[in-house]
Length: 236
Image 1 (spheres, helix red, strand yellow):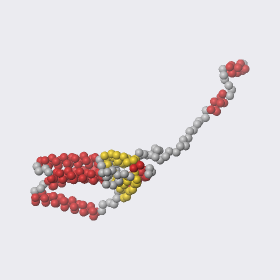
Image 2 (cartoon, helix red, strand yellow):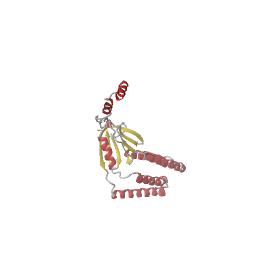
Image 3 (cartoon, helix red, strand yellow):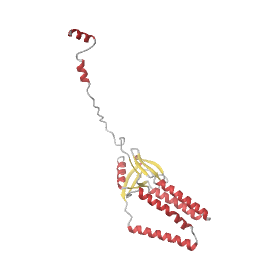
Image 4 (tube, helix red, strand yellow):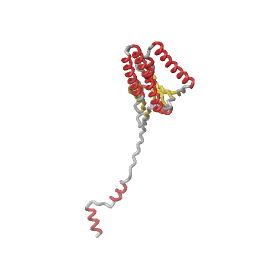
């Protein structure tokens, strides 16, 4: 009987060694990628921070605000036109300041991305960066703060004197209208920004025709400045 079964198996193509071969071929295979990934092409983590101030934005806002104030104090003779211009000036400055609050920096494998730098967004490729340096900012002393307070009080007194003695109410109205805006700006800065004690300079190889220096200045906290500086230096 067993001989008949074995003959039938052979006729059907069965081989006694097939089971052994099947067990030998079913072995797990581990593939190891031994290729090294360079620092520039690897998956480098991104770093982003919005706890930052661009001094270029502060300068731009100051220049625009000074031009608007000069035009407003010089040309409108009618008080109604002056008040309308004063209202438009405050609205313009309010939205201008909100735009500067969008300031942020992003460092990834493509370069350094500056958001709302001079109210626009652009990228600095690593090939354009020559060096990056940083230094701690000194805190304002009590003596300097006291001098600023005294200067502000003296300026207010001068405007009151002009308004009473010469009947020129425009500077005083301008000053009064700015108080709510200044309080709003100070409150926003206290809520949003923390420990802005480090200034970072990114020097590029080529400066634009409208720029004074090839440096991009950033003011931020020390931890963010260290992280950005380290990320940039890895590509230089």
